[in-house]
Length: 193
Image 1 (tube, rainbow, N blue to C red):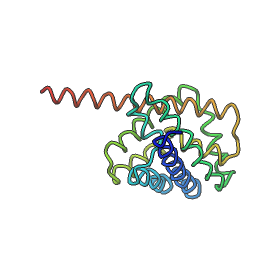
Image 2 (cartoon, helix red, strand yellow):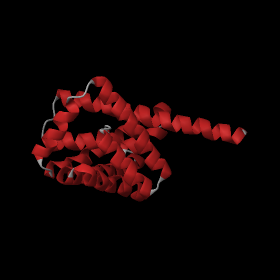
Image 3 (cartoon, helix red, strand yellow):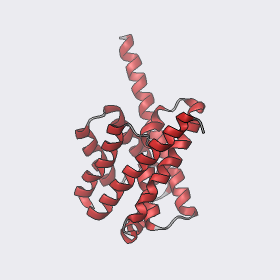
């Protein structure tokens, strides 16, 4: 493993751990307060410049960026293992609710979350992050790394869960890349005017 990928991997594990902590807080507190407190995870990731899949995928550099993204996803997953410390019954209820969505709902909710998290990472403002994260949680948007935490905590890792996570990973990518591309178009247009 190249040194760069090693540092990406370590950073990604730490980012996954921050999301695991945030997910555990949300599972313990719930509601609006839990959704607001979940923002701790993303604020820590942004502040510490850690590598979170949903925060990095929007800026992927074509096919040559895929190895880095895979390293980040694997590292995030390992960090999510801390969510095994959470209450499995609460996690099970969350996962059952998420798994009851249709494929289209999952993809659209994941795209929405991809847009929100990409905006948080680009804006880098804690005030915005608190409300954006609360909005994605309370709206039911799907965040691939948080969903990994809930699935791990529920101890219900199976083929259905893997398929669900794959849809969310793809949807998060579409949302983040879409926002990044639109912002690039706007920026280039502003330069010409």
